[in-house]
Picture 1 (cartoon, one colour):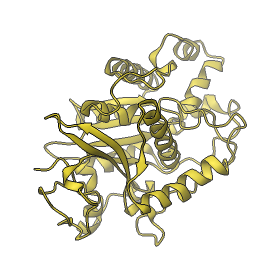
Picture 2: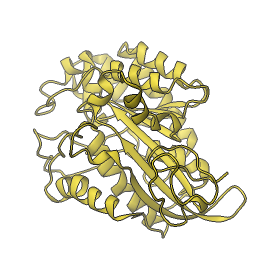
Picture 3: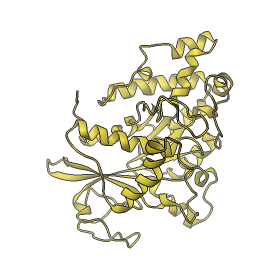
Picture 4: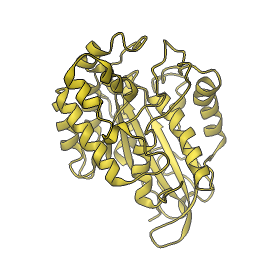
Length: 336
């Protein structure tokens, strides 16, 4: 069996296949000789999925340069969509992107995956193979209500076959954080649907004998870090701990012991917030292969749709992706 999956459904392929048996679409040249890393992302509306995607890919390209390699779009569709939907608004126009359209919309660009070449890396047998990151997400509203028809469920079935599922959890949906954060950031903007209800619907999709690894990722962590400034001794103690792993960015290197420390600290933070449902859901959905992460795509909250004057300062954005890639020896070596 090939180590490559169908880029549209994430389902397994037979060796030598040139056409996906699931979509009848032609596969990229040499696809079944490659190794694919299929990532599905979910989150409620306004949880920061588009921002995360834009910055994660940009950071991945910079990481590749550190390894004297390059990350490139694998096809014209990926190149055009990444440039127009993600890169141009954020990095050229310095504004937040438009919300992801629903899958039923005529302009639903996310129905096709983003596919990036990661270069050639040794497989478990030591054979150098081209590796691809295959990335899909859905609009928050597509997971806010459970899919009713079999066709709707099938459209979301790629989550089940993913190598990693990233769930972005918006901390501004937590009332305790909302109450403290007002006045510390200029405008928290529109809030999306309840993250837990979206997570419930996602976990319903992932209810299989072998669910994929699940990265529950606290987004907009720069806003959480501002809780160090509030007039509350408990928050000052938690967020003012300079030695905490979630206060440090490990730069371009990743190691699993640091990831585990962040997981434990995020677990403690969520417990303090009373988010026991979220903790229990992760434990039930992925008892052996679930982890908490903390990320900030921008490093500073935007004012409306305009980015902060300080620019873009990502924080731990690559951690969830590197949790997957490092298991396969991709960008696993330390760099200076």
